[in-house]
Amino acid sequence: MDDYQDYSADYPQEEHVYTGEELSGYEEYAPEQPVYTSKKKKKRRRKHYFLRFCIFCALLFGLYYFLNSDFFAVREFEVTGNQYYTPAQIIEMSGLQSGVNMFFETKTRPARNALLEDPYIRLAEIKRKVPGTIQINLVERREYAAVPTGDQYVLIDNEGTVLRIADEEPALPILGNIDITESTPGKALQVEQTYLLTDTLSLLNLVEENDIYFKKIEFSTVIIRAYIYDDLYCEGAPANIRDNMASIQKLLQELYKEEITRGVIRVGTDNYLSYSPSY
Image 1 (cartoon, one colour):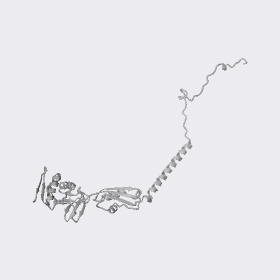
Image 2 (cartoon, helix red, strand yellow):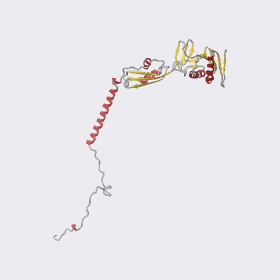
Image 3 (spheres, one colour):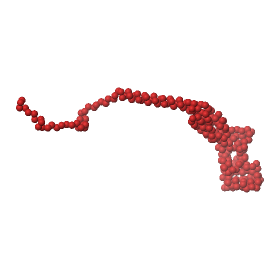
Image 4 (tube, helix red, strand yellow):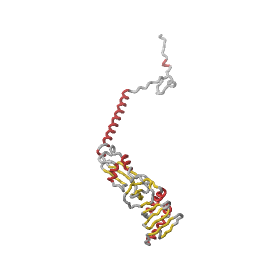
């Protein structure tokens, strides 16, 4: 035992230093480590979500009560595009009221539909202007011509829509000798001479652009008589009169210069135009 000597010092042993790198092949045998989430962290997250929800609800209720406050009460109405009706009549027809909340007590869609029920109103738009103004924008139909029926007159616009029935003769072009089959306000006028009525309304649009006024138009089977004066008129198909409007206007200027207010201007196809001082 006394002869035993320690020779380890003569043989230096290899020192292993851990560098943080995984040993090769170790992962094949290393057991999976479970991941644990702290219960305190979960509770903290729940508290944060609940707090955010409470803040969101508070903001939502605050916004609701602010919008529902008297600050947004209707105080003024602006009406544009009206000609036949006054602003007060338009507001009354819409059913809109002042002093009520513009968001929660002002119903724009029913008000718009109520306005569109009137034959004179073609388009209607209702807008809210904060803090308390309601704007009503209209496009009205305009009285364009009148069709006699018995002792009354059916007033129509430039598209043939019936606007109203009048008891007195209006200051409009009178379309005579038309056989009416239906004349309901707000709907298209129904007549037997549909093609003549359509062409005549198109003619009246062009006449207005050329500063010519027909005080009366009488219908027959295929032609019309468009009266400029009581004893001076154009005779022909509406399309022919329309296509020769420039020549008719030039002839009328010559007749005006000579103070001629009697005769007939016959208009045909292929730019045919003639004037006769007698019927």
